[in-house]
Amino acid sequence: MDTLTLTTCQGAEITPHVQALARLRIEVFRDYPYLYDGDLSYEADYLGRYADNPDSLFVLVFDGESLVGAATGQPLADEVDEFRRPFEANGIDPSSVFYYGESVLLHDYRGRGIGKRFMAEREAHAKLRGFDRVAFCAVERPAGHPLAPSNYRPLHDFWNAQGYQRHPELATTFAWKDIGENEESHKSMVFWMKRLD
Image: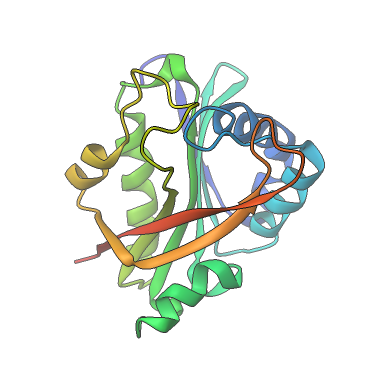
């Protein structure tokens, strides 16, 4: 982290960084397992929801002036139905959960402890605001997916090491257009969650 700058901001403070973050999301999520064929106009709208929420959090990592990593979060109660519904169906009040939107980091910056900082910053933010739990969801691709790189390793061990547990009962689907698809299709996603002490 010695050559990098990490900063946090909330709500409208993200506005000057929306375009850079939109490009970063498209670049990182293009890789397996998301295979996301994104576009900037959708990204600007999506990130605008976070920018409009004063309770959101952005953790941004810069190398000089370049945005190379970001993690986002906001109260689950402010999220879309697809993300709230599994919690409601399992008797968990969405207002008790702080939801992580994404963690994106360019390849060259991985393995430097930035992912741990992303988790720690969001957990601290959630604790300060009285949330009982933090959670995020991850796409689940079928085994043997033709676009999975031979050296692909899921992040499950990393997430477990940070205290997060996979909750298969908290499952949802979300639609986006994969690379090579002509239109959006629904993808299976499962939540990982951690209780805050």
